[in-house]
Image (cartoon, rainbow, N blue to C red; front, side, top):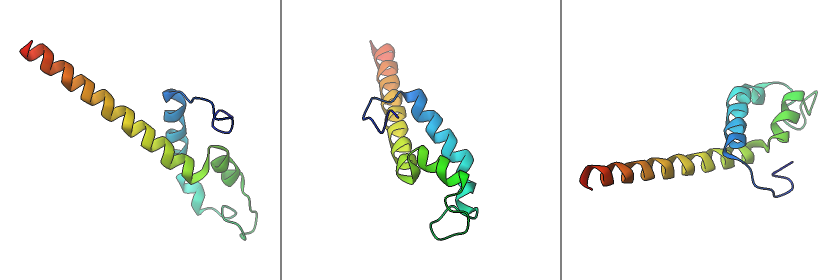
Length: 85
């Protein structure tokens, strides 16, 4: 609901999204995942869509990568300051 309501999403939630998508990527191969297939929408498709679908997966990975890069850069900057300061 946070994303649907344009509310801020915590890094913890973003990491949970990535974890969900990684675990359930195999659901995309199951019958009923795609429109026109018998059983559409499957439970896996419903859950996938509930977390934002493939767009949600891409977005979560992008945000986590940006955070990790910023964290690493700040850590490296801190090391340089301690080393030469």
